[in-house]
Image (cartoon, rainbow, N blue to C red; front, side):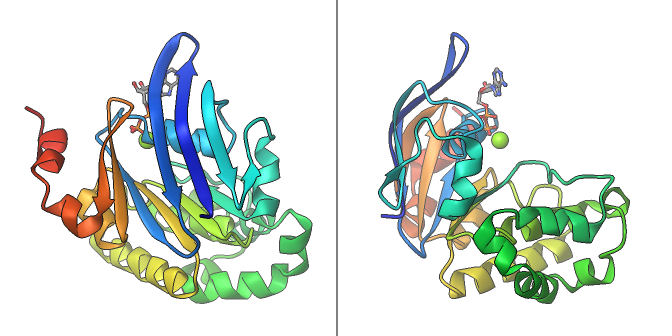
Length: 235
Ligand SMILES: Nc1ncnc2c1ncn2[C@@H]1O[C@H](COP(=O)(O)OP(=O)(O)O)[C@@H](O)[C@H]1O
Ligand SMILES: [Mg+2]
């Protein structure tokens, strides 16, 4: 296993929001982490990437324990996290944003090559490389956020709501990019409320409900599960 999360518990102060969540992602595998708004998806992934400290539980990546390690220790190991809401540096150019993604030594050494690759995946970013990020459309900013993640040469890409608010055409383009990355052997953890899109791109899924793992299994089984409907529709 590439990523293993075991019995994770996370609290904001006294307010616990993640309860005993276990999940794993194999090398080269695409997995969906699903759940309604507020179910704890971002908290789980933010804990994996070290932005939040776990209250209990284990997180290992390629056999290395991540618990207690600073956030910046993740990128050199091969974990990239594209945060919810396309966080880019608004007052830096597209190029500067991308270059910042390649800060660790291995990524830096390959920076020029990776940049070409990102521009091949997103020609739009190449055309706009000198533009300030804040002048990009929402869809282009999402491309930039993803491109910056790729600049770190991840083995595991964790993307939080990558399709949120995208126009259908941009969404199709984004899906195409993920398919390319999967074809290249990258493992991807999709954090999504959009169940159908996420499961269509993943072989397995985990569904959170109020901070607990409700169901998990192969995507086809989840899509047919009455529990999935109950969790998302309520009742
Ligand atoms: N910084 C925070 N401080 C306190 N509570 C938070 C914070 N971030 C999220 N929460 C709460 O934790 C729960 C899970 O949130 P989140 O992980 O963002 O869910 P999701 O990503 O599935 O929408 C929610 O009840 C949310 O209100
Ligand atoms: Mg979220």
